[in-house]
Length: 255
Image (cartoon, rainbow, N blue to C red; front, side):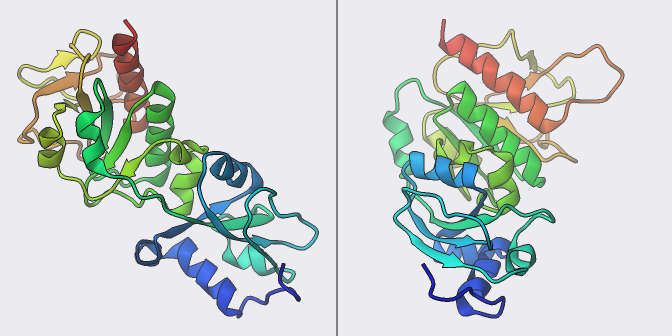
């Protein structure tokens, strides 16, 4: 525990602030921020290393982390946190290293690919759905929002601690890992298949495109999935579509 409360200008607080706000800093340090006792406890339970905790006046650090605890001066956490009503404890966690080649030998594994997803809330929900449905990993292409940004971590509701995430992956890599790639489209494309009529057993990758533009029809994939709906809206939100697709894959794998 720090001997005296840390001011906003202290080096440790400024480092914390950079990790909250700066993707390049998170990548350089291989570290990220976890806000709130519930998420910190989940990270600890899932075996992530907590480097340090920062605690607002009157609050307590999470136990079991084995990390340095820094008390903050009044008003500091409000200036550092990513939310307007911040949690009273924030932690710095170290990223886990995963080997993407392990997916080659993962048997009947299936994965989700997020291609240029831009909204943190959507990516967090995709992580949450993929983990809940039993996906082996979530793979992100370049141009996708940082999975370890505070908003994504929060939106994942702890799922990010329980499923491997690989960044800067190409669709060519996904195919080389032995996955049959299925793209999701809001439009009926030639040879597209309704998602609950497609064969999604075995080693499959569900590929989800950008919220505004989707996946280009020229994308080289093994097949296209559509979700038929009766309403007048053009398409489902990508996170909602991901949930339906993930649980359809789960259903077919559990047969």
